[in-house]
Image (cartoon, rainbow, N blue to C red; front, side, top):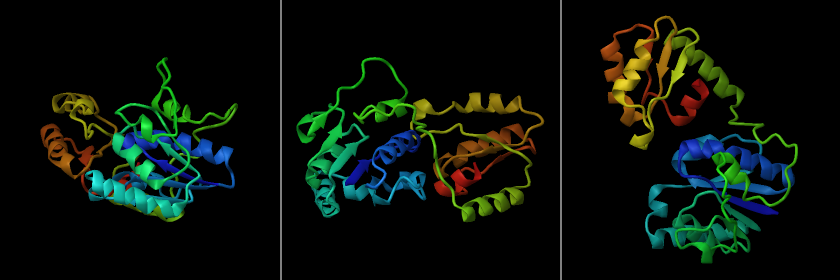
Length: 244
């Protein structure tokens, strides 16, 4: 059996998709499972033992109907038996439709139901996002540890991170994540500074992307504390994962 998983488009949501991936591996131990994702979330799935391979798309590959259709047709060569959609977007369903997988499973919405072979009704009761993903699997998963394994680092990455943390010369730092792609999910700058101002003894590393670097520098320059340092924009996502 060959299974494709169109993964969520955001880093945090992709992390929450890992229990779904583990669940499929538990149910289909001999299947070939491929993660299909945008390139900026690919580092979350690297080196994961439940995944046999990763198909990643750049932004241009999924921009517009023609590009998405072409990318979907390129997936036909993978001959998927099952295609799960963890993204709720119309684009994801169109990609799956063009792959011609005989089973395309996801939640309805955004006028995409006709491109799914099986639309699973979304649970009425509130539940954590990782459980919403697992709910797409109809088989029973009693007494199974969804979380194990989580994000997986190899020995080379672990050794690099150990040496890199030593270079930063901050013993046992706290990781601080005030930023998000969505401004509504970011900690306001004044609030972040207030939180950090209450930390006197522990060392702190401020994480973020290159676009977050100016705000992180404002925090550091405002506080003027030797125990607080920004590394926002200094490392790739995979390197940041290793450091965390």
